[in-house]
Image (cartoon, rainbow, N blue to C red; front, top):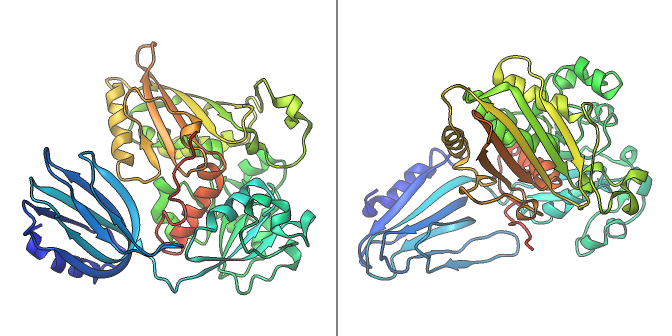
Length: 459
């Protein structure tokens, strides 16, 4: 864009499409270049890059999110830098003479202050429920109204999870005592098999993100086969949308009921599905070796999860019978347009959280590892949470701990025509609660990254 037209561009772009993407660039060769000032209220993805030898560039933006009143981002290094910020005004200028620079801003979505999502978390005393509460404490558009936990009803949330004692939260109640008339969104973090009847009784205006497996399988007969009982809400199953966000945004945005994907299926499908859709790998020749931290088994007391049982060792479980297998196969079959069976074996690792999947695939004739890398890089190049790592960088669970990110790496197998794909997530965040909040943001037209911008904790 010509720098003199930037203000006009911003105004004309935002007016007709307040929730659509726009891109504007400011380029200048000297400090005399015109500044850009525009009032707006949206979340911006801000990037800056400099040509070789360029001096410092400033992007100054008073912005507003929970606990923040303003920020000045200055002195970018020659490498491209990106941040996500919510702006109420826009000002960009060159503060020193020198070679050209570019400031690029993408409006992710409008985030009006008067939109408050009144929210309930069912099953708030489990790990996924606690993670939802922790993450939503950073969400400027969410008000937590109801927290349920039948066995701990009457207790304060802080007494169950002291690490969240600083938050002002409602006491825990039983599901039967909850009134959903004034609730906009419900997160269901209840055990498998208990959610269907509860969701069927919720008022029709409530939007739901279900973290159990109760609505993930489209075929109710497949559900009955793997979960041992008939589906209790088949009429709702027809309208449920499988919420693998990066690959199903359009469907999610217009849904009422979201089936939040399981942790293993999320970690496995994000790298595999684009490759299958692109006819780059053989869908009939996929082996998935997966490993999870112990929190994936839930918070209930179980003998095989005692410290002395799990520490200093690892073990496979659910071999050829894990319930996430049909969920993965459903996604792979849809991508391949035919019925597919995959080899999937999960393992339990003595760590609290984290997940790593190693997928062994056969490439289609004439396809190379470079083709696989190009496909995934193109698929996720604009994604905030899913990243294909640079060659030579090893993904590790510690690199995603506490975050909503997924890291992917590809390797050539020693076996000709085959490749190895490694992906990592935090099983409690991207594999559960974080993705659930991504889904909720989409349901209510909010910026997808809201409350999820925290980076991984390392070390």
